[in-house]
Length: 267
Image 1 (cartoon, rainbow, N blue to C red):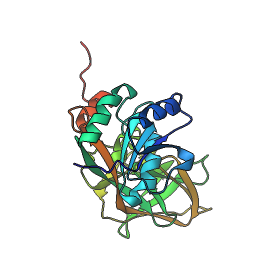
Image 2: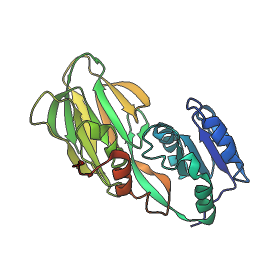
Image 3: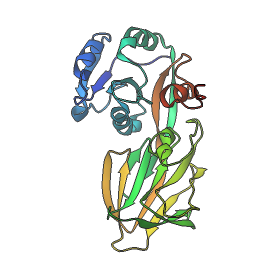
Image 4: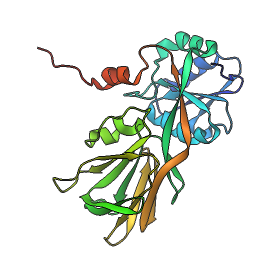
């Protein structure tokens, strides 16, 4: 697979120690690349290399999905579930990118038509009064499904199923499945369970409580307050993640390596 490297942007998180220095070293590996911070990201690069953690990559994915720009991440954060390569793998990574030894994986995203917010991982909906639980009414395609008395709701993509939704009790979903998972946060009932729905279905959330204000947060970064109701649907665009062709970048391998999933306890 060929990739246009003539307009490569290397975007780093200046709050992460060593990210600036590594980005400059990485810049020398490509003939036509420039280095940017998260605060001055370019408009139309043909390829983006992210230096930071998953939060940095999520922000870039939201910005560049409209242009179908492929993104690759070097992890200098904590978990690094999306930004997979490490700085000491630079030479091998650059060689694979230049020789086309990679694949582009499309990931579905969420869109909130009310606010224009977009998310790769999840959208979290809470009542605007954070000191109390809220009654949240969930509608799917205009049909009321249930009412939750909870701290909030997580609407997650398969990509985000290993993030906040997982910590709240949601299932792990393979990223090649087009669906959403809805997970209540600390529900005040014993019969509230996560639900998985097809990605083509339309989600609406309302509340009976006053004031009818919500906070919706995209990928834990972009928060807005809105009134009356919140609608969430599949975004028309996909995030495009560049993944190297080797055995350590498969979704299930990452589950075992990063989350220690499915590993039996030591005897």
